[in-house]
Amino acid sequence: MKPYIHRVNYYETDRMQVTHHSNYIRFMEEARIDFMERAGMGYEKMEAEGVVSPVMAVTCDFRKPTTFPDEIEIEVRAAELSRLKLRMAYTMRVGGELVCTATSLHCFLRNGRPISLEEEFPEFYQLLKESME
Image (tube, rainbow, N blue to C red; front, top):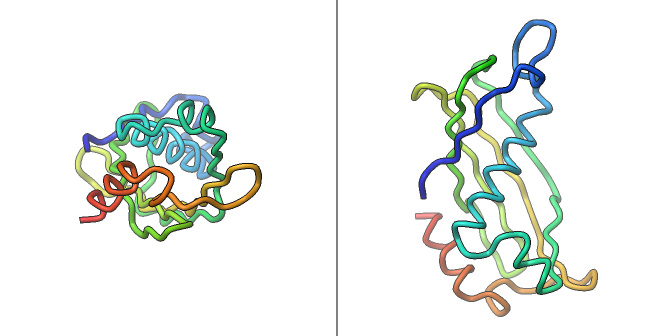
């Protein structure tokens, strides 16, 4: 899929004019929402089905700082997929140069109980599997 582009806003930088590390979590969420929407399983659709997808864990490995007004290209793909959990991988680049790699781990719940993506949303599950290749 086409990468998501986030342009660093001035307010996302710190006193050193570097993008504050906490913002990368937000960038990941923006990119993940875009990925899922383009995959036909946006959050509005999930929530209409009574499904939520909490974040269980996050990792970020910062390689190079970004600053205002850098355009961060964020590639998103499924890194691990089981019946109950999904780990998304993010590769962030500015001008082709790697600035951050990250992951987020998710589960999918309906009424507080885990659901199987493979059973409940087989087309979306297949698309996630294909994004791993």
